[in-house]
Image 1 (spheres, one colour):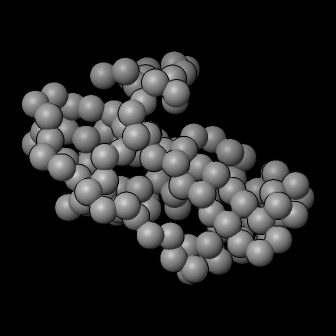
Image 2 (cartoon, helix red, strand yellow; image 1 turned 60 degrees about the vertical axis):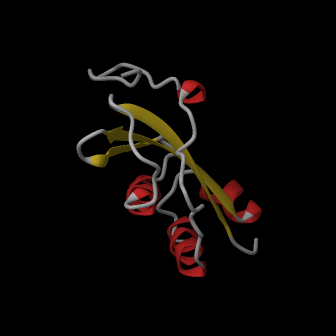
Amino acid sequence: MPLPSRRGQVIAWDTLPPVPYRTPPVMLPEMMAFVSGEVGSNRCRFAGATAARGEVVVDVAMLVTPDMGPRLTIPRAIDCPTVEQYAAGLVLSFARNNLPPRAMVPQWYRATLRFRWPG
């Protein structure tokens, strides 16, 4: 597995293949509203610049195993823990029953979620 297994190791995000969803996930207005609210309430350190742009992008690494399917998610740090964890949960939920048959070995993938709202 190419992802870190020990504290302090770094994820090589660019080397992870994209999640092979059978049906691409749909980002709902409620999802955008949650992230916009987190940014607008100053729970994110980057809030000023991002709020003006009206966009947050979060990468999430996901482990898919032959026996369990989508198993574990690790969000990329963006200085906004609530949005990071929200994105990780969304990726796991989007993947459930929405992936092709699994390989014989565990595989890591990357999902990129883009939250946009009027700036």
